Length: 122
Image (cartoon, rainbow, N blue to C red; front, side, top):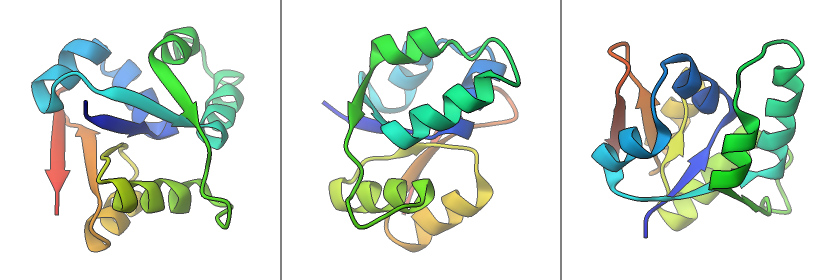
């Protein structure tokens, strides 16, 4: 089974686009296992205090919390390292993170302007 790392901005973009997570993702990589860093979950909880409708209960029910690489403190660095090590794409729309992923052998799934998901691999 494929795994997908969820980034906070990627989740928010998916929700904003009105996409059904399972249907949209199945068109890109099949039926994945959704992985969520505790730090990303904390970012989403903080974001949910400023805006409603992030469907965090849905995310919690669909994803598995995973441990972060111990030596890293920044979320993007954690996502980059896990993506490279395990060949897991990151669901994100963060331009800098996408560049770092491609430049370092990672991959990502983005929400496009047409409200579909697209997998970008190096």
